[in-house]
Image (cartoon, rainbow, N blue to C red; front, side, top):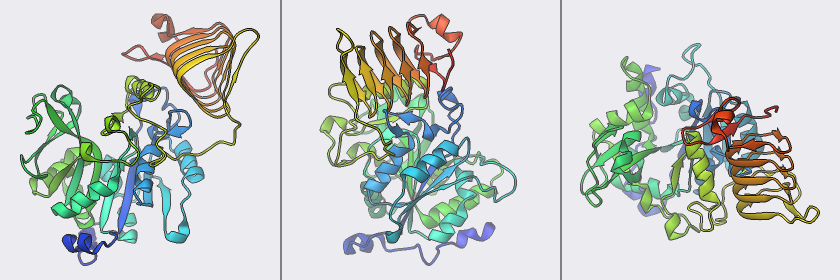
Length: 430
């Protein structure tokens, strides 16, 4: 593997300014890292990879990263998987079928164990073990995106800045309050320009931005590399016995030290169809509380993140289901507001507000849902009361059941988050 640093020495070095001036279309490969276990999202990740977790009704988490790349015109995409990948592989194979006539593809790649019988040791190792994909495609640039965040982003704008700056790698950065910096990798950039001075891993007291001292730029985990820079960095990392094999913890600091790393301020990204107050939305949904909060963002009258932007759609697999239906049951009509209702759902004489209803859900008469996320094929019995809860697929909730009112009682059967969100596992039997 050591000679892989020779990849693209002649083919990948280009005149960046000339490329933009001539309007040439750069050759880009996109790699989506989708191998995480998602332990903090248990029980939703008990039998599926984190990127395969449903979100917002019909979607999966991975659909957001893939939609951003495809909408941006980058349609040669490999998805690196590892843990509990079956449902993710099935979703990709059934949903993400692009035109092979034009050389487009979204391909799921499981851990190949090319260095022997061992799993990926980190995100950098996942790329290193799949270097053959880069060899075969021989792109000029490589996007490396995470698979499990909620956001809209036009990656063309990030690549344009990357080319103009002459960077070896560009890191997408999100503006967050300094008080939140200890949860992120923080980027300290030059006061003028985009070059990164230092990369701080979860700092307690980071320097603020020159134009906004109370905020910092946090890494989003999305990168664009010159191919030869990424290949050389991965090879050097493999030779380093002290490395954790992590992109944010090892590869990016190495390139910062070499002066090759720049930052792209995500808040400057303009996505067609987004309103001004929706710009810069990004949510890491790695915990049950964050996952729940992101759903509540969807159902507000003026949502911070809108699923209805048809100029930059989020694509997913559409089940063959009839339209949603609201039914007057006896003398009672359904009372439903600030709620998204997916195809195939039937809500009968119930009260539902600030909730997300996935495909083929049934909610019976006199049931009340408040701040509830229901996955596919959930049935809620008559008179059931549920609040601040996430119900995974295929659960039949008996008549009169109460969830979310007595957290001590709920904790004896289900998972209860630090913020008091109750998560009921897939196909749980009452």
